[in-house]
Structures are given as structure tokens and as C-alpha cells.
Image 1 (cartoon, rainbow, N blue to C red):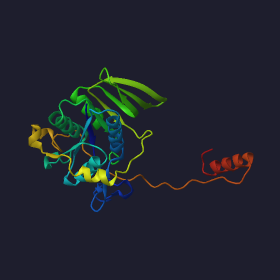
Image 2: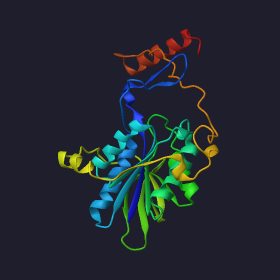
Image 3: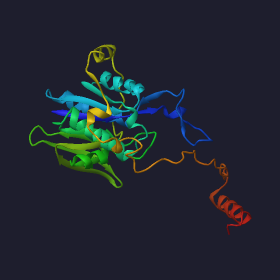
Image 4: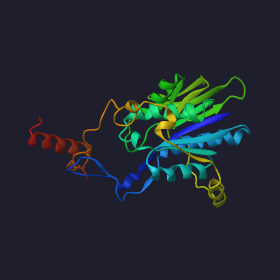
Length: 265
């Protein structure tokens, strides 16, 4: 059984700043990490592997050379192989161009895959679009917002418990399929020293645009249907007024007087 996990390197969320003049994220000097939701997806893949002896896991990421560190963490955490899609032609890709590139890479690197796992979204863009778009491009079933999952030993089906607005749903899909993962009950693990040493001997491949046999007009900024015009932080709001230390009736009168003074009533 072959599992492909699509991952992304993102800025450390606590250090993200926005350039007030250009409206773009300031990435210089900001540490990058493996997107947490991608790590949860990898944890599910490793969990499936621990229950079966026939599972291999390949992690794929599209990004600049420094994205290698995110893939190395994937190898530390149990992936068997890593693939970095790295080419200047990929720069500026929106969700569609990114999904098209990843889908093409999956077909090249692991055409006989059984399952693709992704995080529900990346914490820098929060679009939650790339995973579903990859499934649509590949023409395979998709299940989103998975909390946990299991793969049937007979029948080539994946059974998923997924979040919904009203609670949880149990959904099954015939493989090959794609599942996007939320945090659920997964806990982020720390690799052991032995895991880190073993990861240095695992296969790590670099793939460029020419390897994917895609037209340059389909890649990066040229292949993007949308563009981010500006990124800006939310407006700072003044703190509200608290009504404390009063009985319920007195508090109600105080609120009414406040609303009357502000012209709301």
C-alpha cells in the first residue's frame, strides 16, 4: 500500500509580520516549520503503517530550497521517502497552480498510490483548497476534515470519521482516494535520536518543472487564476466595557443606561 502525504513549509505563526507598505508577509529572518495540519496528516499515515507491514509513505512538498527542512522532519517522523518540487517556475502559484503541480508530481513519483493525505489547510494561507483541488484534478474521491481513519484490509476502502457542523460523520471511500485531516485527537510527536539518524539515509528527490512535463503557462504565477493583492492585519478594536460586581437587575440597568448614553436606544 502506498500513501502520499502532501506537506507545506510555513512561517512560524507567532513570528508572522506584515509589511505595512507592500502588504506582503515578512519572511526574512522568520523561522519556518512544517505546517501543523500536514504533520497531523503524516501522523495518520504513520499510524496506518504501524498497523500494516505493506505500507510505504512518500511526502511531497512544493517550495524553495529551504523547504527541505520540512521534508527532513517528515523523514524523522516516519516517512520513507521525500520529494521536493523546487523550481523558480513554480513561484507565485495560487491554489490551483499548486494543486496542478502536486497532482502531476504524484502521478510521476507514485502513480500507483492508494491514498493521498493532506492537512485541512496551511496556517499561512488558510484557504483549505489545495487538497480538494488535487483530488478533482486526479479524478478520485475525497473526504475532508478527517479526525481519524482506518483502512480496510479487504475491499480497498478507507473509513473516516470526519467533523461536520453538527458533530461527526462516518464516511467510506473506495481507494485511491484523498483525505484531508484536522487535528482531532492526534498529538504532535517528537522523533527519537535513532529516527533522526535513520532519516539521513532515506531517499530524497528533487523534481523541477521540466520533470513534470507541464507547459510553463500552467505553472507558478502564469498558471494562477487568482492573485493576492494585499495582506493586512485585522483592525485593532477598542476593548469593551465590563459590568462587574452588580446584581443581575442592577447590571441590566447599567447596560441600559450605557446603551442610552451611546445613542443605541
